Length: 230
Ligand SMILES: [Zn+2]
Image 1: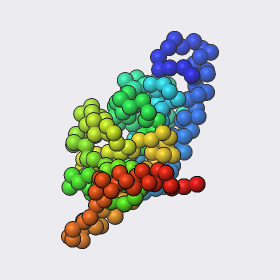
Image 2: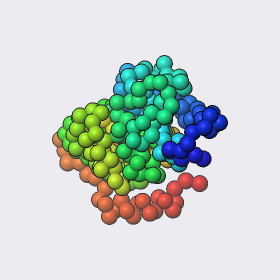
Image 3: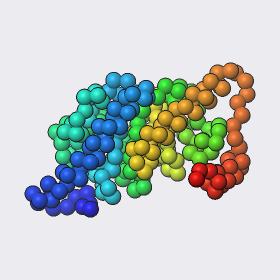
Image 4: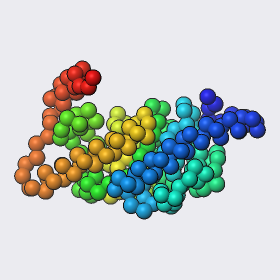
């Protein structure tokens, strides 16, 4: 498959567009899913997917309702922010997506939501600790330092907080999950929001909240990776 920047002949451009089309369809499909999941309202949140092994990604456009999106609305952007294809402006958080893809070659898809309980944790600056066996596998979820929406500073803070992690809470803002596919990143956001709800409810009782110690988490992780599933 082609890589980020190379000489684009008419033939290549046609081939490229055919490849992009599949990824654009995925963005449209997951845009609908994210809207129906209650993790976002209106046009908030954004999702992207890397094009194969390249430095390019397809991303939701800025300020367009998810339910109205078509493949023609999805721009193709390179990690430096240059628009390679499409006429619509990319999501306001395009720098955050670009910087993450640039720093973490394994990341194939990013889902950013404004999920309620995760945002509650962001207001009180509490990371989501390892509270159950799902979180044992995911690991704890840190809160990145606050920065303005759409800023390079936010992109840098989130990229830094993501080191060795699969998800990050954005201060006074929401959640960001990465994975090997949109399916995986989306499922992770759903799971983390559910666990954030459990944790917030536990905190709100005012009683002491017990989390799984790291040593025990490590043992459980090893055991589950050997024994869970078919
Ligand atoms: Zn946001």
